Image 1 (cartoon, rainbow, N blue to C red):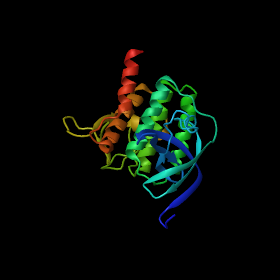
Image 2: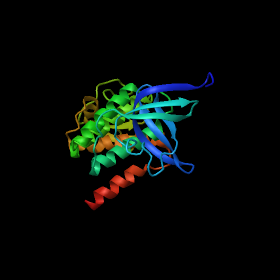
Image 3: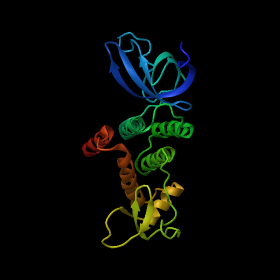
Image 4: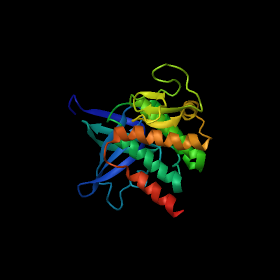
Length: 245
């Protein structure tokens, strides 16, 4: 091993994504608490009788060992680290959505310990049949944490120009990466929403239908600025599932 190589032993991890590599191998993307998003080559994992296949499943807590030089390392060892979270329906699609966000937005090998802990909590809550208002709250809280860890913490309590506290029934224009400005009829730019929506996001209360609707629009707008033009596949899957229910 050269001086630039590393050997990591038994790091907690969750599988986020996999894609084929050569004839029998795969490149796997994982989320870890200390090393963030990691890409590993799993040699021979696509063979029919590979012992790794039953372990390398989405939403299963794992312990990983890897070695080599980045950004693409070689997987050495995989162990179970607890029970697999069983998701179905919209909860499963929501898990796909969160995984796709992480793969698209996280840089390789940047630690996000708080985000990892929240991801694990989210899986637990999704496996307990989180749906409706509860599911919306879970997703918005995770998106907030993700934006914060990426360096885009939101101002959810004061108006940008005056610094005055937001008023629940007052309408505002929310400018991405800036904050809320007082509503002006005919003003261009920014997402129109109520102060109550931002205050509810700050407090973690999305029990009001209006707050859930406006918070979803806000998060979609903010994330779109980071994701670029390529759409999220998971959003289309969720849309199709809802239209067939």
